[in-house]
Amino acid sequence: MRPPGQTVMVLNGPNLNLLGQREPAVYGAATLADVERLCAAACERYGYALDFRQSNHEGVLVDAIHAAGAAQAQGTLAGVVFNAGAYTHTSVALHDAIKGADVRVIELHISNVHAREPFRHRSWLSPVAQGVMAGFGVRGYALAIAALAED
Image: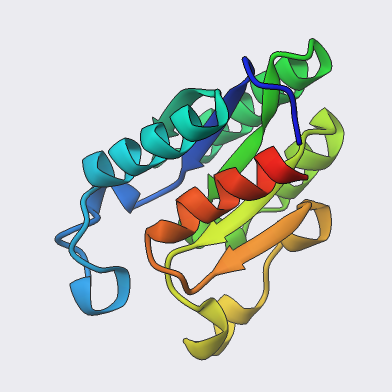
């Protein structure tokens, strides 16, 4: 089990600010605020602080990954739960940021991307992620936080 007192960064990419209204049949009815509350409760269970972020801009996400790597190197960050949205399937820059920052990342998808369109089957993040969580709805966030705590 990881030491308590650290932070978990939960990083959300493009269009996740639209949770609850965008394709509820795929992503459910929970809003991003609901996800943040769920993550805060999961972090509290493990003695973690929560750094919860969302951006529609790739460079902002790259900067957050760089900051996470620095915080992990200082011992203040347990890891990152990263739902990169569509950037999962397109962003070599995010792959390189994770690899370069040497940060623990759990790749997260609300839906089962492997049961969806073929273009969603390819992830640029999986090769540099510690693990991948997909298809558990928003409760996957809490499961990913548990994985960071118990590994």
